Image (cartoon, rainbow over all chains, first blue to last red; front, top):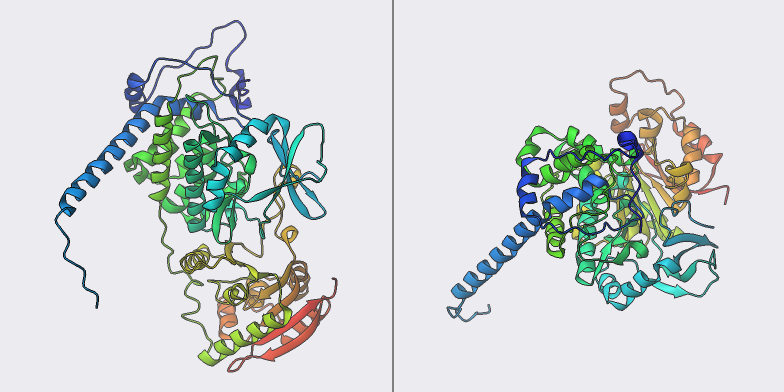
Length: 98
Length: 456
């Protein structure tokens, strides 16, 4: 397992021996999601294409938000289905075929 | 011979032997391939028509030391590329890829790439042609192909829908997908009101810029399976929310404002139909097909037909009609015949030029010659030579100068085409083709020809 190589575009950013400065500026949405994110860390998976560091981090940062919105959507669909079922309980008039 | 487009993934690659395409699955990929087949994912995807069917083959591998299995996938009659797709086709392909990823996650697998070049149109439907795109999903891992999906699908689709449909041509310049900062910069201001596009394009571009050149270090935050499903759902809704309605351009209402009389049009259909009957081609390319009226004559006869036109609106109309009518044999694509797809990519050989994907058994060039000769100043001899490279046989229409459509092309310019006459046309084409038949069209000075090229 190996982490993807740094992209050549900004490869000169850090020098050996000097701890890398990790920028902490994050947009508002990111901060909100970050607050909800679990603090457990895992080893990154390796891929044959570069998943892109920014793309990878964006997903992990916003993951909770995506999950939350998805859960709400599913929940809402279930509520809607339940309401529709309740109202559909009235026996439907027998269908007449012309 | 190993396919020039198949060099990225060490797990598997494609080779061509005696004109047949095979996929060699390497030993390293064995657990993933086994899971694909045993988990029911392969069967589910093939059932839905989302993945090409394959058979395991016992032909000798290209490199026996690393080979685990050889697959013989179903043949795809015409391989097309993103810049050739109209908006509707592009969107259908993106949604299909997300559906595939969803089905994969349900069975403990994930797509390790989301390249637009892995998706194709087969029998009028989107299909994944890369059987080795799946890998076993590890809980906690984000979608490694998220960046690729946004660059290959979301960015071009958003630009086509929200800015200009012609921006699909950016995919031809950026074969690894449209850079997100470029896409974000080109998007109109009103995207700020679309939270999903803001997230997947603008914020995504910001993250890419911000973390450019940094590794992820030893450890990263995990992403739960539920969060991953949420991401996929968000992407699906983003893509589904993008729409494009074709404006009424010059050629998409061509048939409504044509100079044909009804009898001439009926006669033209009849002649083209009889020529197709006589030739019985397996593959037909309709060059300058507009909305595909004549392509449909071929498709209805069971020919694998590609309808090319340079107008995205005409191609969109053809695509919508083909989808609505389930016309499995018709593939409408965007192509400017004066600048057809060149071979491109690594070493200039990765993606095939239009001519390399041919020749078709029959090429249709109906109401096309005046566009090439007068609209684009292509000498008749050059037009004949190129058409001979695209089709073994040719059904071609000569549209003379006195025709109102040709006059329209000459309306605002000097007539520098003294050679554009029927006799000169016949002489130029006779160098490359043998004329098998010719028929006049009633109520016009147009003429239809059936030709066979001299080189076999």
